[in-house]
Image 1 (cartoon, one colour):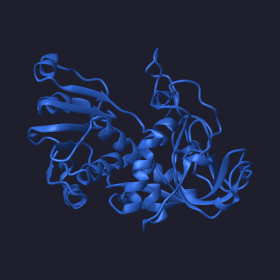
Image 2 (cartoon, rainbow, N blue to C red):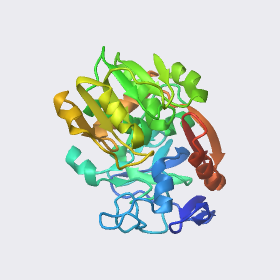
Image 3 (cartoon, helix red, strand yellow):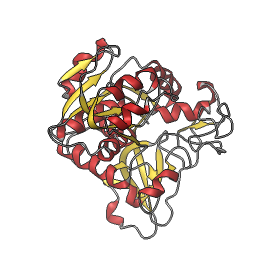
Image 4 (tube, rainbow, N blue to C red):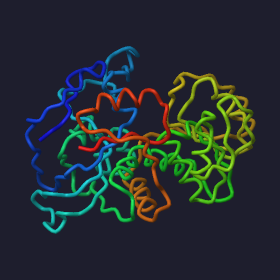
Length: 335
């Protein structure tokens, strides 16, 4: 099959396009999926760069688990396609199903999510013509979304869903979403709106019309004054952290799932305890969060903007465009 192999840590040149990679074979309890679309994530780029560091050395080259990483690896966590083969123990009738793949490979409850394997990192992923996954990770999906639109959902939308679930966002509340033009942010805007919340979205001025189309009631620039809100859903971090925390109403909740503007921040603890705030960490999403995403997507209430599509052989170009952040939504590879 055709696939792109990550051969070592480094720049886009370490991505090797091949047309002679053996087709994967589904094992017991697994299905094989003909990949129709696979989207890009920050994890793909940061893993390629080895940018996660370790507990002892922040400059160490590691994968997202902050330890050793096995090469070569086919990246690509977010996969949409059709089941074309099944392993032992899986009903043959599943062949032909149109599916969206849950990229979290773990058993048990949400505690196990902290140490989950991640498709495209600990197991070969979707930047290829075929991929195998546990049958329970392949969800039949309805609705009218294209394969590219479906592939834009798994990691970003499930991360957003978990953030809002952990912050217990409900109807009538006001939610501020940072990085609202990105994959996680744009999903968080739509999920919050679907729950009956009012959304304040933060993004660059060129992206404000797109954010209003997603359902945001108010759109702010990164340096604009922030109104009082009930929940902050933050994927940016950095210098804005203290200002966002101070904007929370009493008993407000701040939930964070990223720090692209800087992961090390200062907190005035008086703000936290005097206003009785809750600070919540969130990462990836559980199988239950993913099922919530599939349900919203199938109903038409969640649609990820697709900013561009690329053939598999141009994955390196797609990753370079991804780093520019000059788009709204997701970039997708179509094998």
